[in-house]
Length: 252
Image (tube, rainbow, N blue to C red; front, top):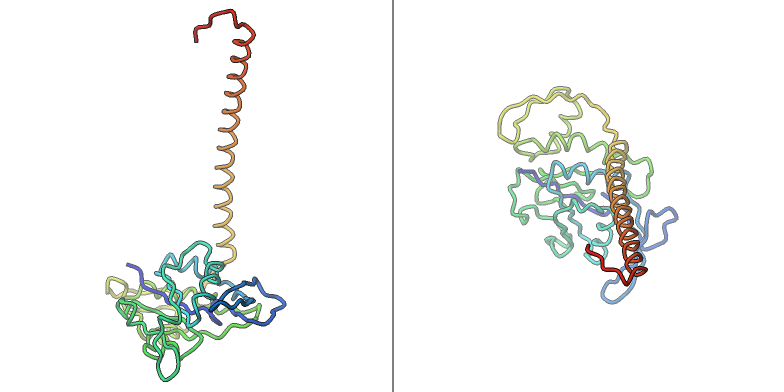
């Protein structure tokens, strides 16, 4: 019952370069047509949290015009939790007048349920009504585009029809009360309180909860190993007694 969020990779979630980047978040050795290349990658601030949080509200698809040999290992790193349900690459794009276009009609989903986020307007040339045009990211450590979009995307996830998403984005930013049709096609009012979502705090809390769970499991395992160790020691003591009294018969 979730809507589909299609997200571009390059200059939307990350910035990559074949030339050295001094403050790159990571680098990769990739092979394309038998040739090896080193790629340096900068993650857009909040990209991992962005994917994690919105996976609770959307089916996540990463759709790039790049080659899969490069894009797959990058996605593996920024999506460690595997929240992206589908990856699409250059071969999945439509070639139109020499440019690669991401045709949402090929996804076999109702267009009223699809939002695409991309820094290139030509990418959503066929379905501009479904698109959010995001600013290109290169290396700005103070970039807040993903943080800015998060609240409105959470709101849009409950909208019956998300076409003309650009107009809906402006309405969300300008109005405190918004009337819309929810997923059940019922008229509903939304109170936009414009609260900043502390993504870093939310992620830290999630990771702390995971760490606490791991510590509990380790504690249980240690206790189990300790109990097993005591059993082994006791078994060893019994064997030693039997060995020392080989002439006696024991009933165990």
